[in-house]
Image 1 (cartoon, rainbow, N blue to C red):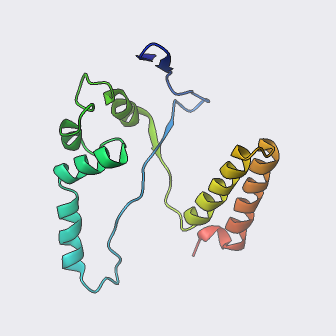
Image 2 (tube, rainbow, N blue to C red):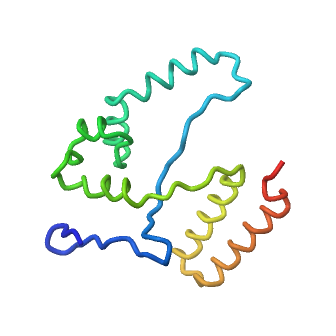
Length: 146
């Protein structure tokens, strides 16, 4: 347990039988095999992944720095500083979601469900409907198998 100020604590992630897990990952960038300017795209990715830019992104978006080098350049994220706990927990417990072409449907369905719940809807009914809709989408797309 980590104490945050006078009225907040962070508890360890729960273990539901397969070890403690927390969500991890964010939007990723890649170069498609059909990219007409592969070298230029690769140069941009290499440029944008420099630690100083990852640190700037972390600061502006208020997210966990993507690398230890970026954490060293980001206020609050160095070893012993207040936010470092989140980076350390991510390294130990983050479970990266599996890649799937169904992800856009999943996220928009979940976002709508969240909005409906926040607006006062019945959480159980809304989440059950969202799960059924996501399952139906995956099934109708052959579970995104080729």
